[in-house]
Structures are given as C-alpha cells and as structure tokens.
Image 1 (cartoon, rainbow, N blue to C red):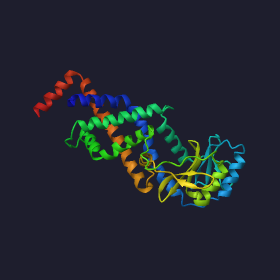
Image 2 (spheres, one colour; image 1 turned 90 degrees about the horizontal axis):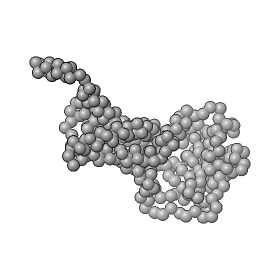
Image 3 (cartoon, rainbow, N blue to C red; image 1 turned 45 degrees about the vertical axis):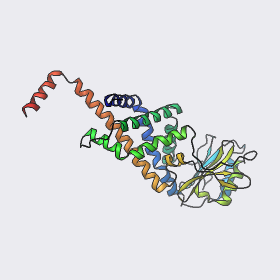
Length: 307
C-alpha cells in the first residue's frame, strides 16, 4: 500500500472520529489522576465498620443497594443503585454538599465508558485509534523537524509504547480479555447481604483502604488498595479471597501501582491529545492554504522567488 494512500486513510479516520476521540482522551486524562487521589486518601482517619453497617441498615433497610463505595479522605459513603446522595460517616446524615472531585471522576468514568450513553461508540472510536497507530507505523520512520508535522511525528514515535498500550488494553476490557493466570473462585450459593459482606471484609482489611463492595456477576466483590495496587477480592461467608489479576484493566486504569502508573497515564493522555490536535491543525492549515485565492498564492510565490 502506497504512502499517499496510507496518509489519506490516516487523515480521514482522524476527521471522522475526531470529536469522540477528543472526549475519550480528555476524560481519560481526568481519570489518570484518580488512583493517586484515592491512594492519598487511604491514610486518613480510620473507618469504623460497625458505623458503616449501621448506616447501611438505616438507609437501605430493604437491601436494594447493589453495593457501596467509600471515600476515606472525605469520610463519605455512597450506596450504589439507590439514587441517594453520599452519606457523611461522621454525622450519619446525607452529605451537605457533593464532593466536586468525586463527582468529576464519576462523570469522566461514565463518559469514558459510555460516550453519549453508547458503549459501542467508545469501542469503535478505540478501534479507530488503533488503526491510526498502525497506519502511522506503516508510513515509516519520521524525519524530525521543528515544525508542526515534526512534533506530530516525533510525539507518535517517542511515545509509541504508551499510546499503543492505552487503546489496546481498552479493547481487551471491551471484549472481556483478562489474561488471568488462574480461575476465579466460583460463587457459592446466594451472595452475602451487604452488611454481612462489610463485616467479612473488615475482619481482614482496614476499611479506610476499601474503595467499593458490591455484587458483580452473581458474586460479592470488594476492591481494596493493598501496597499501592487496587486488588479485587471475592467475598463469601467463609473468607475474602484475592481474585486473579485482570492485567488489561490494571494497566489501563493505572491501578497496578498508583504512584507509577498514574503519572504514566497522564503522559499517555497528553501525548494522545497532542497527536490529535496537531493532526487536525496540519489538516486545517493545508485546507486553508488550498482555499486562498490563486492570485495571493502567485504573489507569495513571487516574493519567495525574489527573496
């Protein structure tokens, strides 16, 4: 396939998917900071599991919540699937004001995973991003220059491992590829009620390190920070068992090591935004140049020739 054809395909895919790609990359940049924010909050005041159980029973007496999430830094708890506001763990009352940062991360996650409410749009845009990377590689090594095109090509090649890994792991998540080295323990019987699951988790883990507890795929799961890594655990009436690592998810979300992976994801998102914006600017400058009146182009050519 000739280079001009590769360049044309590269350009048109970018133009068609520019807006969804911008939304996905921008929300990904916001979510890149979430692991660091979460880890910075787990060293705060201890959370009493008895208090959490009490509040769950008070605000969810019919056991309709599918789970809960805990914000240790803000001392807040949110019951998932109830539509209720966050609950202040200190006062036991609904939080007076929403947490701006938590709300921002929630909005970014929903948009990142279901753009305009459509998961297929995210998946197709991610496939388009992978196609752009492959086409860029097929066009060959760049000649680096201090121009807009030079910065575009230089960013693509120097950040190539990062910008390839991001959409690749995203597609693995979309298609359910986990590359787990072991089989997850099978659920035994009916899932635990939320108060019982909280007691089981609290028996072996500090509740301030818990991010969420809830029912997933017919089993109760907890996500808990352990040594800077966000691990998933299966919770049963007998024990709390670590689940096999889902490496595409850990890498994509930056949860394999918050202090290392989170900055890498920030760099990746900035590189992707740079590629998208410079690519669009290159196209825009070329279109504007073609639309200039012929007389102006001839005048400029004459000036350059005289110089």
